[in-house]
Structure formats: structure tokens, C-alpha cells
Length: 286
Ligand code: PDD
Image (cartoon, rainbow, N blue to C red; front, side, top):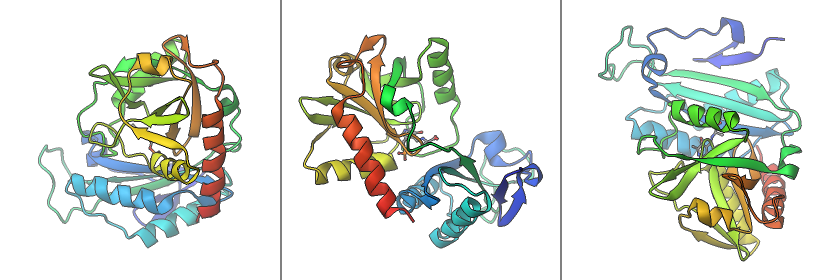
């Protein structure tokens, strides 16, 4: 059955949703996006995703074309129409269609293009991978220096993901000046002596929504947190490692560049944090 997707105010079968070849998102990668998880048919961390969307748009001098209430309504409608129990809603806003290709921004009154679609992922919360853990390799971080803006320019993360696959592992961690920035599509953490260590927020990394919620839950559970950068060698010598994202929640990392982390199995802190994150987020889901 074809999905129903959202395009500029309309709900359409996916085969009928068409965007211009001149759309700035298509020719310039000029757009931003959000991915919101769905569990039990409800949206996780929705308000925070909307706050980050507005921030990303503002950083690119775009006005948010819809209100939070309109986005919420559309997200809920798509979840319902596509019968999503567990999965994601993808949302993309581009600078629209100027009718030609030009590096300069189109006039301010050019309507943005707004696209939303669902991805059904049954078993997302119970992902068996979380019980085994994930292996990563390190790759130089060659992305631009505004990684805090969630743009659709994902070519380098895609190349890194493919390099990881070719080398027989699941994902890659980016390294800059000898320190881990983040994963291809996630924020990274290590655990040493019971302390959770994760890079501090700056323009060098995406300000993860899952990261923000997780750190709040971890503080509430009296866990110790240190926001600072770490190297691959420190990750390899850590007791545990893990990453967070809206699509993977909390995912244990058991091997970094061929070296086992801790026992080489998901550790107790990552496992507990995954449970806490899922429990608390489900309670707050809308
Ligand atoms: N990726 N860092 C990067 C580079 C990301 O692309 C993502 C999310 C994160 C985690 O952010 P959050 O917790 O808000 O999902 C960190 C999404 C899931 C994606 O591209 O599919």
C-alpha cells in the first residue's frame, strides 16, 4: 500500500507527491530536516525537535513556514493515516522553488517547500542490535563547520557510512584534531569509572535532541556526567561506549577500530540508560 505523505499542505499518495527540479533542496542542498520517533503511535521529544527546526531555519535566514501546532497536526495525521505504531516521521523544509538555478537566495516571498513522510519500523524499541551492540571505525571529520544546523547535506556522512559497511562494521565516528566529534548520524559517549563522558555542545556537532533528554534523565538518576571531548584511544580504553539518536535511542558500541570496548558486550550503564530513555520518553510522548 502506498504511503500517504505531506507536501505543502496536501496529503497525497507517495507516488503523486512531486517537487520541482529547481527546488533549492534539490539543486543546492538548501534545506533542513528533523526526524521524530514514534512509539505506540505517539511522538517522542516533539517540542524539542520543533525548537531545533526553527533554530536551523533561522541560522539559514529562513522563516519557519508553519506553526508548531500545524507541524504537530500533520505529524499526527500522517502517523494515523499510515497506521504507524513504531517508526519515524521525517520532516524537511527547503528554501523552495525559485524557478531557475542561482546561487543567490530567491526573494523572501518564495514559499518554502515542506515535506513530511513516515517510516514504519516495527520492533524499533526492542531492536535486537541493542542487545549485541554496534562496531564502529573512525574517519576524519571532513564536514563543514556548522554541524549544529541540521541541513540535508548528508553526502559525507553517507560516504562514511558506506566506508564502515565496506570495512564490515556498522557505523563510523568522526575525528577532528584527534578528538571524536560525533557519529555519522548520532552523538557519541564513553563511560569510565561510572562517569558518562560526551562532547560539549558547539558548532562542531549537532545538538542532539536525544542527547538533551538523555542527559536530563541521567542527572535525575544521579549519574555523573562530564561534557568534554575524548579521543579514539580513550574510547578504546573506556568501560563502555554508546551513541544516541532519535532513530536508535541509546545504542551500545562494543568495538572501536577493531578494539573491544570493555568486555565487548553492551555495558550496564548504556543498557540502563536505554531503558530509562525509552520509559521516560514514552511517558512524555504526545
Ligand atoms: N540524525 N549527530 C548527527 C550528525 C545526526 O545526524 C543526528 C541525528 C544526531 C542525533 O540527533 P537526535 O538525537 O536529535 O536525533 C547527532 C537523524 C536521526 C538522521 O539523520 O536520521
